[in-house]
Image (tube, rainbow, N blue to C red; front, side, top):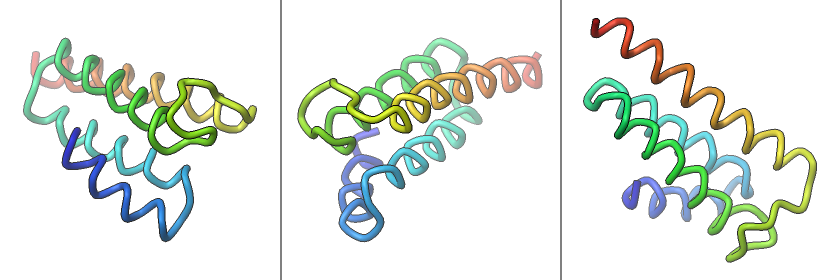
Length: 92
């Protein structure tokens, strides 16, 4: 997640604060192929909180100022949980 955050700092300068969320989601998707359910949920929660703290305005707070950002934040968790369940079923 740290490497993804560093890469996303460059993306944010080019495309704005919402694009790094997709980068974090891609990292969670790729991580799903290597780790189990618990670490994947932890990675999903950690990446969502890092995205909120470092990338979404107002930066360096855990406050979500826009309705769109709140929806993206919530959907991020839903996608991570669904992905986690699907990978767990495939492994079983």
